[in-house]
Image 1 (spheres, rainbow, N blue to C red):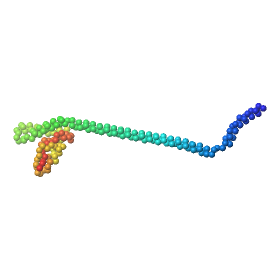
Image 2: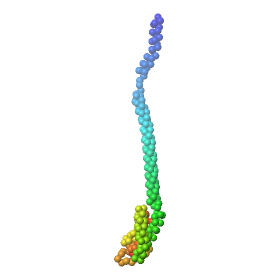
Image 3: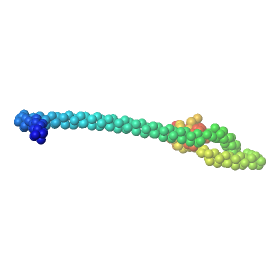
Image 4: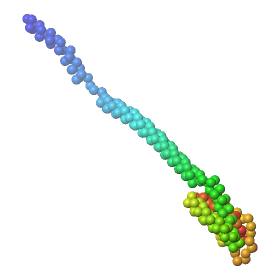
Length: 211
């Protein structure tokens, strides 16, 4: 009896589940329900793809902006490097010029001494005694040595007789009137001019032809 009772109770417990399954089988699925579900899924996927695309576009925009900033920084660095190089070049040139012309004042004084030697050696030996002639020979030797020393330090004479007057290297003090020569041609050097390492430190005083 007890076994029969238990079997009946188990059948009762199983009846609701079976009834639900039967109801599910009997309830008709609305037409288009699966299509709506599919459409919702497509919309969801589309929305996700759209959001992903927006994020990608933002990232690309940020990358582009960073690249532009990086390029701008590189240009600034290059400009700064160029400025440093130019500054060094200017400083090197200034240093070289200082070294090249550091002794200009001394050279100028020595040139004045050379002028005095030239005046002395222009004297006519025929009008001098033997003793004075010996002194004059000594002056000529000292003058030659002095000019050699000046040459070693980058000094060169400006002597452009027969060439067209150059105001950058010469100053015209007098004029000549020589028919055989063109105008503005240097006819004579009255006082020598000098350059130091290519720079004019004293212009030559000259006569210029003017017909």
